[in-house]
Length: 270
Image (cartoon, rainbow, N blue to C red; front, side):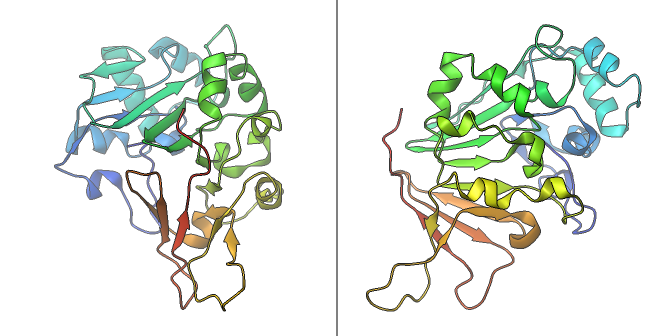
């Protein structure tokens, strides 16, 4: 599980959907409220094998960052967990077979003192498929991570890029897209309310896209999708096979094809 916010409008709460189940690892990419709103209830109702957060953000560091605006319920629970245990990896390392997950992050105090640029850039890989969840990293945070050669090498393998800061303009970084050429970008976001959300065109120019599996007349190239957003597409399910091929299925789809899409990896695994 990557983060544990909820969507009250749609009635979607991870503590309800996964209540009573076992989660190998919960990755908290960002210690802002929208990323941990449901954490108190996930903590009570879901069995967590382990938790991973930025190793440099201690309970004291989190309290300092939240001093001005205070802590809501989710952040208070995160603070309690950090106080009782410690930051970084907590619990038993998950045995996920051929699936591997790891993260990169900037250092509190040395690099940044704001939660966004201390977000974990989390990668999940199975075979030739790699997806990146970037939390709320802003341009400066990206540029600092690019000083890490290991991060740069892993960035070059990303197939699906979940845009940082919900696709907001301040999460873009040109230098990142000089290294990575994902097939699609995903925005996890609410309805458009601000000019900073108008970034679809910027990302579309920097990804290769995947074909729409629809009825295509003979001799014509299929349409492509480059950017997905929960605003338009609803919940997205990505099914991946062992060769790296994957299908994206939105819950809100344009008839008649239900916008089922297939991506084929164009680069070898790292």
